[in-house]
Image (cartoon, rainbow, N blue to C red; front, top):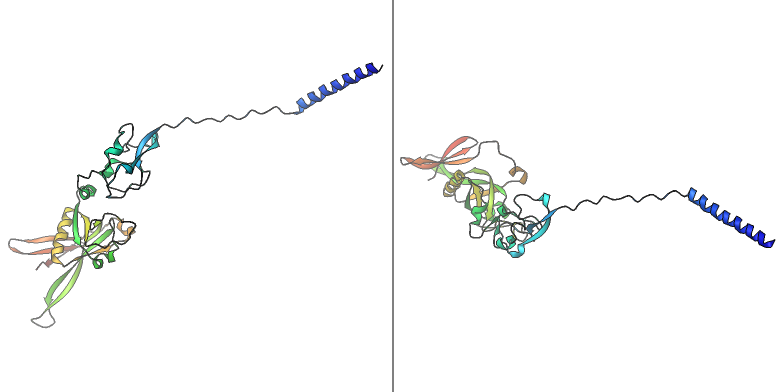
Length: 275
């Protein structure tokens, strides 16, 4: 009798466990599948020659100036130097001079480099331009605050003699003329860029960028006056295009005429003798 009861109780207990498991399975939500992430295909890259350090305008380069850097293939341009095309480019370009400033990591373009066996200043001059030197002092160059790549006006002061207050006397006076406007300064002495972060460069010669006609104007003006003054222009003003007639200084005279010049200012000509 006791065995029969134990058997019944075991069957009942087993049935209860099965019922509990079934109930649990019915109430538990099915597991959600983990979302799959799309893996983007690897972007094709190439090795591009870049500046391994900051390269300043006019400074010579060496083998440590360049390095190869992995670069997206779609982000290259025709001027970039690829290792697949020129594996020895870093060595070949050592000793060249930078025609412009490169910052570290910037791709190297050979058009901004010039070989040391060529004239550097002639290399940085735009086509059709000339470089002319003007004697300067701190007093004639905005206190020495003019730097390469600044824009200036060139002012000439000359002495003119005229009749004095009484008959038979003469009176000397000085006149000033702005003979050139918005002229780019190429270098102060031999310096073509700021040196060691210095903001003041006091030199004795300023080399300026001119057209052939402007170079003749400066040559005559330096003969007419004891010195020319450079007036520094603001950065905003130097980037605006002048819409008024350019100032000029034209040679006049000939075999039968007294040597002289005509100053043309805003389209109005005025003759000035050179002696």
